[in-house]
Image 1 (tube, rainbow, N blue to C red):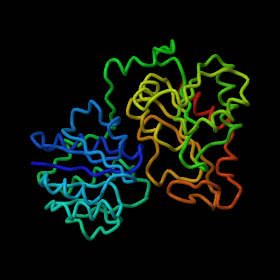
Image 2 (cartoon, helix red, strand yellow):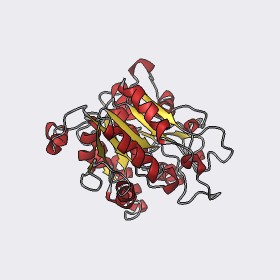
Image 3 (tube, helix red, strand yellow):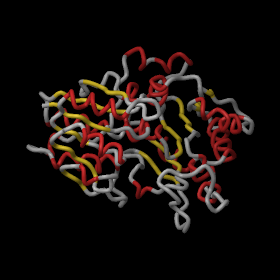
Image 4 (cartoon, rainbow, N blue to C red):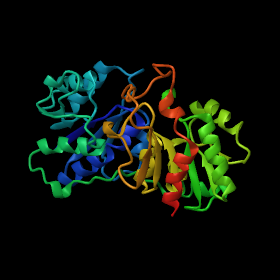
Amino acid sequence: MKILVYQTAFLGDLILTTPLVESLKKLYPDSFLTVLSKPFGQEVFKNNPFVDKLIVFDKSKDSTFQLIKNLRKERYDIAISPHRSHRASYVLFLSNIPKRIGFDKAGFSFLYTDVVPHRFDGTHEIDRNLKLLEKLPNYNPSLVEKNPKLFLSDEEDRFFENFSLKSKSYIAVAPGSKWETKRWTVSGFAETVDTLMKKGEEVVIIGSKEDEDFVNQILSKVKSKPLNLVGKTNLRQTFSIVKHSKILISNDSAPVHMAVSFDVPVVDIYGPTVKEFGFYPYKNGYVVEIEGLKCRPCGLHGHKQCPIKTHECMEKITADMVLEKVYKLIK
């Protein structure tokens, strides 16, 4: 049997798809399992023992028509799409895959042979995705795996040692986000870092090159000197830094799901988004948020600017609120 998993959403979404992939392989151990994803899927699924093939599809460069032609040649028996885009629906339909499972809220969902309800009712994204498996023949819930996983080589695993760090001795802080309104405040991060370091904690700041400007604003306000690795590590190296941290402090973004994959406790800072969307830490973590604001949520992902110009969902979160959760996890 040949099975295709179609997930071309964001990095965090792809990490949260790993339990679906593992569960599929356990349900059908003799199957040939392919994952179709954006280019960063090469980092997410590297060394993953449950994936037989990875198809990289860059929506900004690659031809959708050619993708359909290639998928037709593969003659897949089953396709499962946690991604709710119109493109996913029609690509799988035009690829002549006989059984296609997706969500009822997907664009062109009528093109699927089987649909599963998708609701933002507090159900975690992992559990929502795993519901898709219930449409499979011979579905066995006892074989379903719920924990996300990332697999590092021995060399990648030891990368954190390059900075004279000791495993589980430092706190990782991920201030970045693609959406500006999902970033906590510069002053909040700065005060949190300073307070932790005054108490003797080692702090490592992580992020991509796109986060450098925001992180430099934070560093301009801190009196202490945390280890700044923003823009200095690739994705696999960042996995290693997160894996060996004792706690991660992050906005509602992909690093949260990296940490959960390695059983690292998380303090997750929420602003324009809400837990009901289902992307909170799946286990071993706290969410910090301002409840009762009528403007929340203002979107599934956040915005470049606050729609009502206040950004009070983040401005009202204090360093003390975040630190309280950090200390609980330390204890």
